[in-house]
Length: 329
Image 1 (cartoon, rainbow, N blue to C red):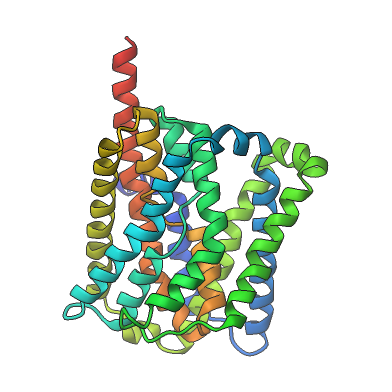
Image 2: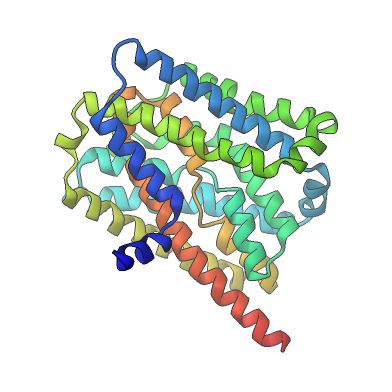
């Protein structure tokens, strides 16, 4: 029993919450009148989440990091050029060993923007350029609201996913994500101090909103028979493909940083901001872009990749921190 408790302490609590949410949706999926109710609640939670993200984004942080344009271009190129190329290539090469739905999810995650909180946290832990990380990660998230739907429309059919995107779906993303974000940021002069002083109170909004969307998506997928389509072998395949994708991107980012002659602090920003994909943005985007019946399968690779990237980046950031501390002695 003690061994089990020790093992659980080393696991990200959010991963356990995600697993519990998927299990709840599998055993007790939303049906009937519950479907529109949960859909409405999930959309409201996501709008609140992006409103708070906009309110938390400091104008001073944007100004402090905005001047490092070469670094920001490299991060954007990694997120929206390198990642899609590798995601498309893997989805084509892996056709003999993976189901089309899984490959569609792998390609979809490669088109998403970077994370914000974890990218900044790992950059700070590793001794990187935190203001530049704030600017790069925020810029990736904000532009991703527009770029990701366009990339999905351009590449998803090419990758064999068979999913198309309508103008209405792009409009839904603007309404659900971009407008609340902009509104929150415009209101920051009046509510910013309160938001900054209540970070612990507002922090659960991030995770609870994602859990609501995951439950809603998996409920629809369970009703459509997701667990008859996805086997344990499929989950292992997703993990393997995610590991290959993450390794290729991180290796390419290290190479690009050296070729560009970036200082250590900026190279750390490129490594962490350029190799991450956002679960916070990806789940609601999938819900807005695709039919409810396919969202559950599509976000499986994103959920697995998200946990893998956190684990790998935590290890690397810890090594950077150890090197920094040894150098300061």
